[in-house]
Amino acid sequence: MVIGHYSDHWVLPTDQYILQIMRVLSGIQPSGQLHLGNYFGSIKPNVEMAAKADQSFYFVVDLHALTTLHDPKLLKTYREDAVLDILACGLDPLKTVLWYQSAVSEHTELLWILSTVSPMGLLERAVSYKEKVEKGVSATVGLFTYPVLMAADILLYQADVVPVGKDQKQHVEIARDIGGKFNHAFGKTFVLPEPQIRADVAVVPGTDGQKMSKSYGNIIPIFGEESAIKKAIMGIKTDSKGANDPKDPKACIIYQIHALFLNESEAKALAEEYRNGLAYGDAKKKLFATYMDVFTPMREKRAALKQDLAGVSEILADGAKRASKEAQKTMEKVRKAVGLR
Ligand code: ADP
Ligand code: TRP
Image 1 (cartoon, rainbow, N blue to C red):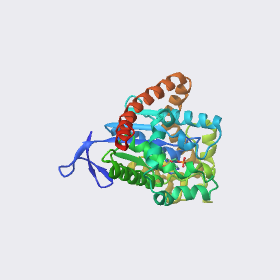
Image 2: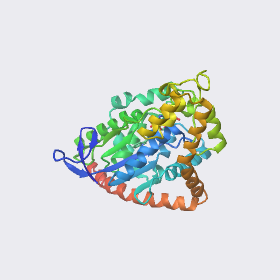
Image 3: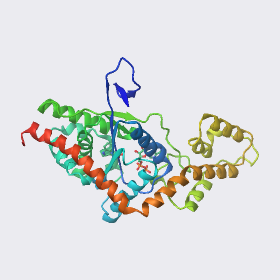
């Protein structure tokens, strides 16, 4: 697909824009059990974007995870889970290059070189560092230079577009700034990436109505036991309206979650049922049925992948090989540019 490149948005081709090949890249944190918020907020848009792009790269950021996770067993489990999740949710590994960040050592080599052109002030302004430290994460050098490793991840593959959630926009802008500093100092070496913010993705509410998040204990899992999914859905908070009372769908968490699965006319029809007095218990049963309809094929696929870990390793090894090839091309340019070759 050829599309136009304009401001910080990607748009369909028109005569006004320069046409170019779109290379999309994104990374995912291996952070435990996938929930509905992650699915609609991150996995689904990334899988769709990867399918549309001319070239796509997707990796599990196990090196970044080390900034907050010092438990070798858990890290291994989480990163394998992340790969199984993303494959089960439809990422096509033939099309998209999929690998563990740590399998391509150029990420860390470029991290070092970029750190020598990264202004301290730029990193000191990074919001996520301050937020994490406030939440009690150790203020290590690695946590501080997290955005430089992310810049290396992006610049190494000469990515044009980096689709991320709003919380990561600043990191992509930092990557752009660092790439710009390098290009200025040593000549044009890197494509400067554009963040693509998923502005249209609403915050998925959790079972208590706050943002769904592992840290709030309000998640509905995707790949957990069916009984855990049912329990979470049946536990969604509601008000005290009687079974047959009319209900305002927009004010109801069950509806807000259910609507994520529906097209406009389906959502309208469901809203009408709420206004006509659908009982909360029945509304939850309907949501559970939809949930299982949508996720059962993915749950089955994940179970099959789990039975074929050798096959999954092959996908990752192939991905690392393909990623390495690209990374080495860029690193040769970088080494020459700075005088190491
Ligand atoms: P958690 O808050 O459960 O720890 P993460 O921070 O690991 O989730 O989320 C990974 C990505 O999933 C985020 O960058 C964001 O894009 C997306 N995401 C997480 N929770 C939600 C949510 N409730 N609504 C929309 N997107 C979400
Ligand atoms: N920091 C990102 C997150 O927490 C993950 C990430 C690391 C990433 N490197 C990346 C995302 C490169 C996009 C591109 O979600």
